[in-house]
Amino acid sequence: MKKATILKISSAILAVLAMASCQQKEWTYENKLYISGDKVIKTITNIKVNAVDQDIVASVPKPAESRIDITFAADESLVSTYNEAYYDNAIALPAENYTISEPSAFIAEGAVASTPVTVSCFGLDLLPKDQVYVLPVTIVSATNIEILSSAKTSYLVFQGGALINVAADFEDNNYIEFEAFEKGLSSVDPYKNLTDFTMEALINIRQFEPGIQSVMGVEGKLLIRISDNGLEPNQLQVVTPFGNYPTTSDPKTTCALTPNKWTHIAVTGNAESREVKVYFDGQEVGSDIFSGWSTIDIVTPYQSDKGLQYFHIGYSYEAGREMDGMISECRFWNVTRSQEEIAANMYDVDPKTEGLLGYWKFNEGSGETINDRTGNGVNGTAHSYLVWTPVALPE
Image (cartoon, rainbow, N blue to C red; front, side, top):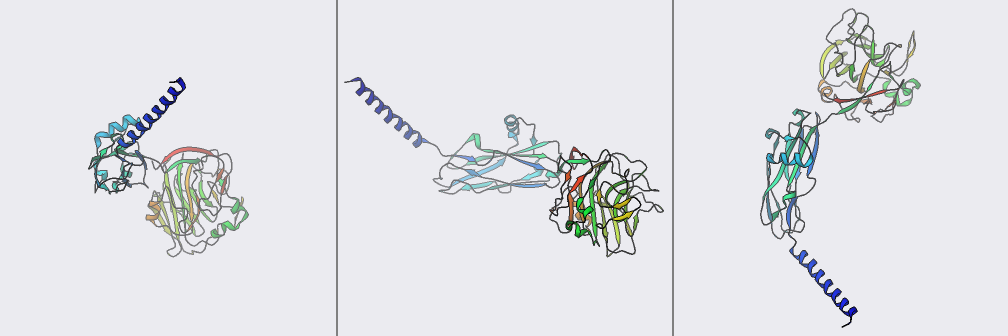
């Protein structure tokens, strides 16, 4: 037999053997059960994320030949396995922070995915923010099928995170000015005829010395500032067309700020009750009632002996009255927000909430433009170069 003929026969035999080998492998391929989806499911927790429901689903590569009954369970012993695999230092999520109300599921005959098992986790906002927690959920039993050991567990990971990660620092006598107010553009028309109002800001003042520090508003119209002649350097004051609260003739010390401490301040005005209220961190700290309540126009500039006064954040009247500190979450409303609404939204609010005219989060992190998150286009510009400071709020 010629050599070429021998080579052809050998090649044919090898091809047949290879096909047989592939067919044998395919024929003996085992259908194994595994948890589908991500093996690690991370959730960042904070005051806005205090509960999570997570569905766990098991699957098979090929349709099940018969019904498969499956049981899931939390297994704290697998925390060390997670830490070794993912180079973490997590601890087990406490048993009082989760429940698996129905741990059983099944894959119907002819199907490839199981019914879901829901793991409910709660009280997450109360966990220490500097600790990572993990809840291993694993398949502990299944009928009529083998379990793939390398993919039978999902790790639910919970780690504290901040709602606010950056803030603007008004050092070097900086502040925010608004072209829309200075030019009287149509975008600020809603600010012309105010009856009710709410102003909010999250501030951290470096120090309090004799003299005025301005937070936001318009001199002679509507303004939140810190101190006045006759008031303590750390005392918040509200200036309205109807009068000031507190007054220098009747100072009250309830509206006193603490240096180097983040404080959410809110001031509300209600035309029906003619009452102005001041809130610190969602709690009322003072109020006063004024007569002669009428509409407020903060668009038309106020004529002072220092010139025309416009709406600013961090400035009023003249140089030397700028705010010395950091700021975030500035808002202006044409409604009177309730104490409950203020307390529930100190670190974030839906930009489309009814009555919200201006919303300046100060979370840009760079540049000198402060965007109006409502979409109304009343953007601000820093007077000079802004310093952006990393923060983690709420603390």
